[in-house]
Amino acid sequence: MISRYSQLVMPQDANVVGTLFGGQMVSWMDIAAAKAAFRFLKGTEADVAVTRAIDSIEFTKPVHVGNWVNFESQIINTGNSSIIIQVDAFKECHDEDKILACTAKFTMVSVKKTSDGSYYKINHGKSI
Ligand SMILES: CC(C)(COP(=O)(O)OP(=O)(O)OC[C@H]1O[C@@H](n2cnc3c(N)ncnc32)[C@H](O)[C@@H]1OP(=O)(O)O)[C@@H](O)C(=O)NCCC(=O)NCCS
Image (spheres, rainbow, N blue to C red):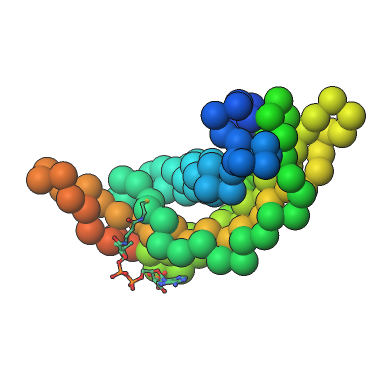
């Protein structure tokens, strides 16, 4: 199942060459991955998942102010506490509907929150 999430690129998201700042892209991809993990963890003992690793990140096309970025996240593997999520970011502009701009593999780990504001790792007990 694919989770979807979108962002409009605003002027404050740009870098010094006027395209989308890579750190902002990664931040949005992290949220897109979190959405897939959030849905996966429904009905489990885990409260939420935190990012453990980001691998194979590639910026393939520049994205410009005024473009939309449409994220597609898909869980590709699961472990005991880990959830591996492929996130693809597609840019949409006036002339083009769907151009792959960035891709990465996120490993998120399911955790349980505690009353003192901390958290600990917990097995989610699910597979895909
Ligand atoms: C997430 C956290 C609780 C996990 O605790 P930990 O002691 O590192 O746990 P582990 O080493 O057992 O790793 C947890 C899982 O991640 C996997 N993992 C660990 N390192 C990994 C890596 N580099 N790449 C991919 N998977 C990895 C492990 O294989 C394990 O998977 P499994 O439970 O399915 O077998 C802890 O590392 C942490 O709090 N990290 C900081 C998270 C954070 O601040 N993120 C940014 C904000 S969201």
